[in-house]
Length: 114
Length: 114
Image 1 (tube, one colour):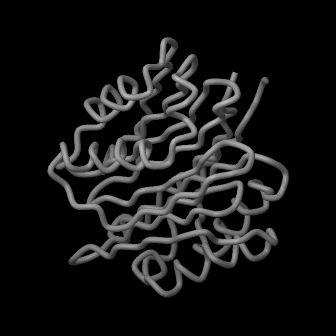
Image 2 (image 1 turned 45 degrees about the horizontal axis):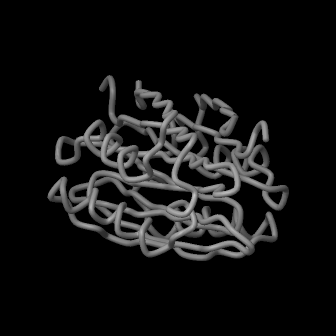
């Protein structure tokens, strides 16, 4: 049994604020992450709050990506869960940090399972 | 600023195995959690693996729920993310543990934000 899933929690501070409130940009980032990993997107759902902020979830074969943003603080909480080998969570995390231009990212890896 | 989101990670061991492979049951549980909290479901996506196992994500106003199951081990990895006050993550966690009849649940609460 052992580790069944890897769960990366990203707390991204000092991001580009405009990008944290841009639905099209965020969708593109998360779908690009799936595409770069060569995995299929099963489903996605996004919601934009007023006056600002956004939440989104993407289900991928062998993985999920979730994001919640606070543009007013330049902050995003993201999590990447993977199981199996099709998806490299470290590469995904790196790509996401780059895209939001976070100057102060904190990434924690948790092993899920036994 | 401070805490912007609460993130509960549930590692549920010794669950009822049949329930971990039952798409209809799992959908019902997660949608019930949203309903009990009086919050709206924005979107949902589920996928069943062959020969067994299931992944699902549900986006709720002010929250998300994700689940990945391994019926063969009686194990489920679940996470509940909430921001705002509309959704009580502790009640949601309790309901989910009950529904899967986990005899060995581990729940970790993480604060997300600053």
